[in-house]
Amino acid sequence: MLKLDWNIIWTFVNLIVLYLLMKKFLFGPVTEIMEKRTKSIEDSLAEAKSKNEEANQIKAEYEVALKQSELKAEEIVKEARERANIVYDKTVKEAEEEAAKIIANANRAIEVEKKKSMQDVEEHIIDLSMVAAAKIIGENVNKQTNNQIMDDFLAEVGATK
Amino acid sequence: MEAFREELLSQLDCKISFVIPIFGGIPVPSSVVATWLIMAFLVLFSVVFVRNLEMIPTRMQNYLELIVGWVNNFFEEILGEEGKCYIPYLGTVALYIACANLIGLFGIIPPTKDLNVTAALSIMSIIVIEYAGIRAKGLKKWVKSFAEPIPLIAPINILEIFIRPLSLCMRLFGNVLGAFVVMELIKICIPFVMPVPFSLYFDIFDGLIQTYVFVFLTSLFIKEAIEVE
Image 1 (cartoon, one colour):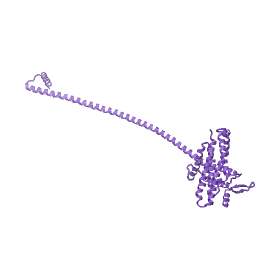
Image 2 (spheres, helix red, strand yellow):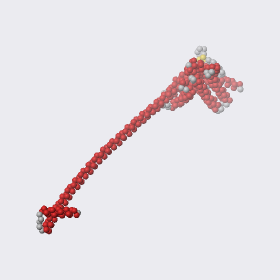
Image 3 (tube, helix red, strand yellow):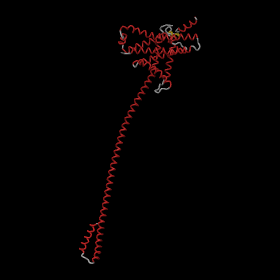
Image 4 (cartoon, helix red, strand yellow):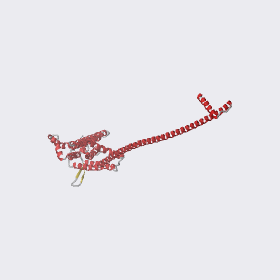
């Protein structure tokens, strides 16, 4: 039962052989593939992280570019509006000026016409009054005196008006 | 009663299976034949299932990695990064002792019932332990480490070289022998049903616990040996 003898050598040999076989066929390959997998997962994660960072960076760049272009577009629109306003103002002003000029011309023409009409009327009145006066007086005073009288009369009338 | 005693004693003897007829006949004990069976089983199992491993594991590879991963983690936790190279040996011993203790379920006498086997296992353990110590510390420091923490206890430290394998050997042998004797008694007395729960305890539970204890203590001693202050 409790017997220690040379048979112990069998177990030494068996154990060493088994160790070498197990290392070659079980622990070696399985541990290797597990480590390989761990490494590949780590690599993938690192790669994903770097890709993510890169993407974020690109996104930030794009955002900056987008903002810049927005600002630029706004500026362009503003400038265009300003220019349009200037053109509009100028055009309106010109038109107003033109209109004012036309109105002024018209007014002047009216004024001239009016004056002319007045003068005509005056002359007619003078003639009429001359005729009337001649009729009344019955005699024709010389023309110069007549005119003098008429002017006085008209001045009187104008003064009373 | 006398026959019963005879039967039990004959069961306890380590029989010689056959004799290799060279050099005047080399006897092969039954424990060695059982060991060969276990080796054949383990190697065949490994060769069949470890073939074409893939990065994305399928079916059997999952279980295989579960076992190997568990063994690796268990020893790595004790040994740390420096002791990684001893994991395959400890794993081999763990698998061998586990199979040796469980082989009783198949009606084969467990090889660990043979004192030669457990003695060889524990002598191998102490060789690995001291080798690990020498490799980690260097020969000079290793010799010096016997006088630590104080030179007074150097004899005790040297005694430990013999006590450790002796305790490892006897613990495993005693447990397996005890379990074997109790199981034989139960089988002789009540051969129906009764052996089942006892077999569950003695063959499976105790067998695995002893495996665990053996490799756990060995790895603990290795860790102690490779620790550099």
